[in-house]
Image 1 (spheres, rainbow over the protein chains, first blue to last red):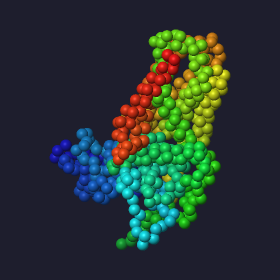
Image 2: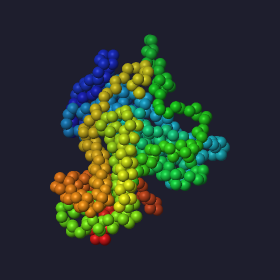
Image 3: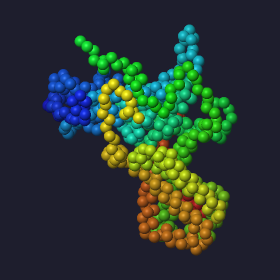
Image 4: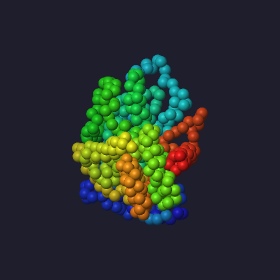
Length: 249
Length: 156
Length: 135
């Protein structure tokens, strides 16, 4: 699509005016290098200042601008208008999350779940600062590096039909991040996280649909993280049945 | 200008309001006691998933050729009738290793089905409650099938 | 549930349709893949009946073999075979996705893992066929 205009159909929700969401249609000038976020910014700046949406870095590293574009969870800063050959381009709030206003969704559930899986380094014994840093080899970094790339954009939650059916499900990014810390050689908190991951709304609810990995903009591959968690949990349980001795966790 | 109530919300306020999850949050100073071996073994999910996985491999590696031979090649007449004669098959199946193999061949795909179907009922058929009932029905069927297979094989 | 949590702002919670799995191609393929388990269980039942007939003596066994040769049953077996082939293909691809095999400094590429699993499948099938038909 070269210089010209393109039609956008944008999801609106303004509870103080109407109880149900609706769509507004906008006509936006377009060029080869414009992304959906540019179009939204144009609408906000020149056409309709009441439009509410989140964005920040506009270069695919902050995870703020996740929305449904033609029914697919995308980062709007990384979705070029020239990709689309039919109009209007439909922009809606991220699926499976409560909508606060227009394109802004409630992230509370996601943030709360990050807390329950303790997505941070847990130490049983903290090294005093004078003893220096925790050292890691490159191999030790490689073990978890891929899963640390998560930018918390929640596109994977919108792609996950299990989360859509069962909002209690921990969700792809949450489990992938828990897995990231479990794999980190500096971490000593796997037992604490396992108690949460092994509940029925944890890893076992996942049926490996795989769409989370398809939509992830940072190639985190949460589906692989979840299945590997299942394998390691099942292996550990089997080993403790077959060889119940030994104090290894 | 008056500040609207919404502007006074902090993230902490919002997080405090969020609904309780299944897991109660322990104070961060508490360290979990290492879970006893018994409690670990009593949690069935890893075992069900392990059986599902084993059943998946059996279904993938062994079922196509078995269906091909029994269900199609023999039935369509591409195999000689003596290949599946009573005497020959009873002889084959009587070997204890053959019985173990057949027990696995019958039971593991049933456990594979049980686990997958359980989640199909919840996610594709949209049944959100009755979790324990559906789990018991699915795994119970598989266990029954495995038990039947064992009984029948012992009689051959 | 989340929707009943006290909030200082109203939210709209969209309904998720129960037919979600019909709505996109990847979801339809997923539903088909999951449903192949039903056909695996169906064949387990047929095998169980086979073994039961075997345990009941020659007449019962030969009666079962006649049933197996009925056109309707052959059609069912064909559907089961197709389902099992689809299951095997997706199972190998998913296994290669999860299971990372390291050789020295590198990971085995996923295509190679799938090819290896296919190779194992061919060998195992040959061994099984040998036992059923020629042993």
